[in-house]
Image 1 (cartoon, rainbow, N blue to C red):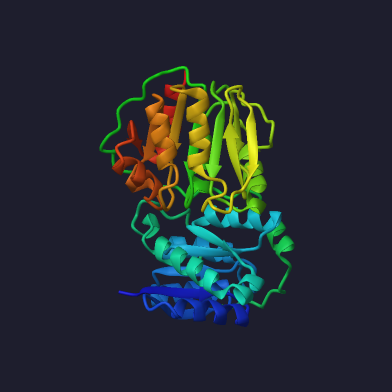
Image 2: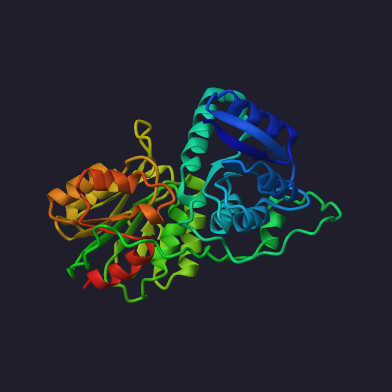
Length: 377
């Protein structure tokens, strides 16, 4: 059965191009379009699409507000389009907090110059998030929001920066219903770990917030974070985590030194490695690698440098990045945890760990932060 998609954007050109790209895939059906957030809510309720593509900057009602209403009234996987700017990153992170599953850069030049590449990426994202847990109850809806008023005067089409500044500085992470107990969830063993390494992809920004906000300022181990994310986004994401968490969080720079209570986020478009002295090395992104940053590379360097003193965690995400790095960690005697299927947005990367028999424990998202505190001496 074809994946039903609702395309939401106030630009007629972008609506047409996205619709054309998706409709060229015989396994995808564009069932409707909308020009603003209010229309998006009405169409989502009427058409019950499997996936919604959503712009942020629109008249009448912006995309983030629309996502909040949709998650409350008819939870549906949403793919946000965003600009590759620092402000665009802030807006996208707010959209993910509101309930969106994933995002793609909105680049008109790429649509014109690289139609095949854009088609492949967009269709792959649509298919992936159509299978996400977002609409099946693992994630409860955000707090109730009032229904939109039946009529309203059209708002001026403000630039993205003014819309972002008008939005709340920090939106609440949607509350999630408790996940069923994991099939393999022993109490963690306490150990003097020298490093905690966490890798994630789709669904990772919200998942990392949930985990890291549970850690005390006195957390005894250094932390490295590998999140698949564009170069323009990682600095804004690190700033956001730093404001939300008791520990310190920053985008990693070449020469940074690992220390307890500090989490270093791998910069987008590059690779992060750790040497035996606890120094971070930031290397150019290798075009031969699908992921920049790549979980396997950071995990592999940690295995070489710290032997059995690494506690690694693989969170929600598509694909299998992290599996080979986790294999190296296991060979060195380190510990590997995986997020359970019920609490993942996309059960891909953790599933690869579990299927390869590399997981020492499988925990729900809300258990991971608590167990990190318990495990690290």
